[in-house]
Image (tube, rainbow over all chains, first blue to last red; front, top):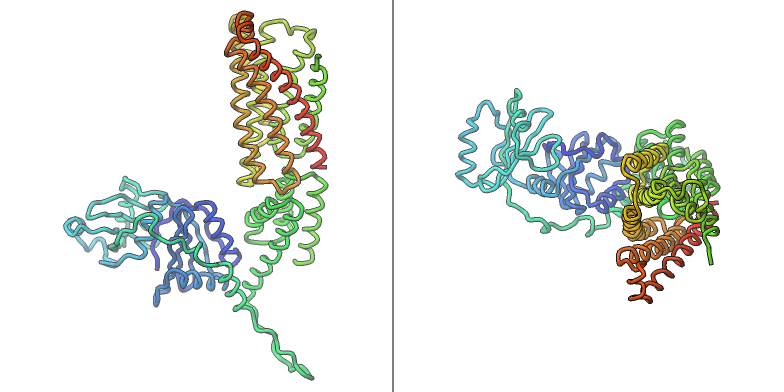
Length: 321
Length: 230
């Protein structure tokens, strides 16, 4: 279980299987995003951390093993495509994103200590004496607060809703007062800004995503020489098929929009698709999608051109859906 | 040769075409349309038609200059909103707000003018300098902003229209900048004019040609946009 407080929520409760993850990561890179993506799967938790648009860290824990870097990204992609995950995206300050990375890869000194059973004053004095760099993680079932330390001196607090390291203890301490609160002590070796490689720039994640998608597709039936054998229909994961169908539709719409409106047309389709068709594609959501797309498109093209584009897209939707 | 009448026609074309775009569209075109219309009503009509009733009243003249300043502010607001759209693809706001806020600012300016003493020649000159300063610096900012918009939408049907807008603001910069230069250095005073006749002549010609080119380029740009967005 990866315990991290929520930062400033950017997107919550999305299904990562319905999102083109490499594309989304590239957008976060282009937008100089700082923060983390948290993936909750039935038996594992993944975290991808960005610091000013650089993908500096990735981790996947499932209780048995702990994957990092590209292994973690590949596992996150694979589990996302199974369609039973949940994605939350939280914005943090670059400094805090870096601290969270350091924290995730730190060592556990004490784990799951009941707060009411330990002498917290003594513990803090001990941290100071040992000049510990790391953090105290105080948590209950659904709330987490972090107190960062550098060489035994408290740096600040991070709790649900923070976007940067804060200097007031109120919220963090309120977690400590909750019944059943526990504490972990983590030690870290500080990593300076700019020392971490950008995992996005050194690997082709789109190719990795595609490879995993291809591997999940059922093998084509061998062509029989004479009488085709009676075989059960191939088992296809409905969530994966739905994700693939959405991706095909999105890509076809993007191509149409780019042909009519140029690059900005493709971006408009992506944005409105994610906004209006992110969860369900039905008549109502399609109507909103086309209305909003048309409104944006009319800023870069005339009514005739926009109407032609929308008609073409509507016909395609009727064929594909 | 007096081109005032022609300029009024060209600015009117610009305003009408711009208004046509604003129909059924987001408010960015409304801001730009209102801006170009205000130039027409705030500055060009009184200049081209000095026989209009009230144009010799100092308060009316002051209002003309103020409306001209409001014109560039509203226009710049439109381009800023377009830039935000081209970056974020977000469309926000209500075009009625643009009309209402512009009317409210004009009304507040009117109240300000009428509760103060009648402006004398020196006050009118200062108001005009303030207006021209706004035009000059906002033209430069708009040129940069429109360049960035162009980079974002260059392969869309409207893309090249923004290159034309850059040309419009270059002409406006020359028109208003040369007038500001004359005003700041008092080149229009007979003594200064005699001391620096070449500078005055160049500035005056730049002012007149800039004005004509600005109206020509605005009219041309909007007709070109009408063709692009047919």
